[in-house]
Image (cartoon, rainbow over all chains, first blue to last red; front, side, top):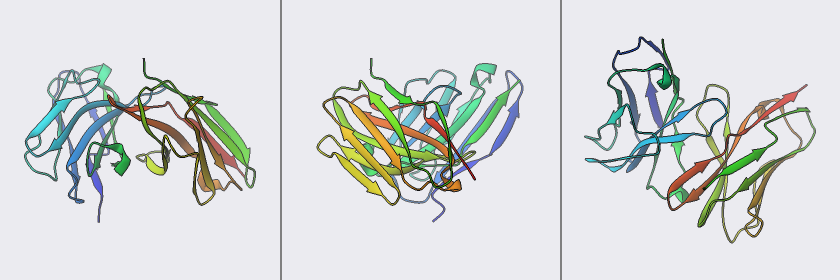
Length: 114
Length: 110
């Protein structure tokens, strides 16, 4: 099994550009989520989904959109990139939102907005 | 405010030595606590998980302890190896979701 696959691994954007970070899992996990990791801070939840067709906001959702059309995929969209969105982004999935089952994380996307 | 604080921020030890990482939390109500290992350029990987009723949990050379009364947890690494060099993140599960600590960066030197 591939687990959680994120693409791209690295990306540089200009301010105002848009892009989509891809996340796919092959474990039939219902729960998927996006986090950002910034220096000196713990991972912060951006958006999450408890199943296909269902999404909700996390702690820091502004500037990001998500959709969940299939169980496998959970893309994160930046509509108009800002330098404050420079960060490392992680996608995570689990059998359910209850962390007791453990989260599987992707290897991350390092995004720089100039 | 729910918070998870870890200490030290960074640590350097020699290969073969033991070390202990600390995690203090103010999350309430508390559901469970998990330690993750994050290698450079990789996503976090779960090491152990403990519920409020568990005091200790081992995974090979990694042993986690939990004191729910004082809201403290520790991760003890025995006979460290170069491959233990990583960031270790304490994560507490609350009703509002997961609260992540900022991690302890461990460097194991030969």
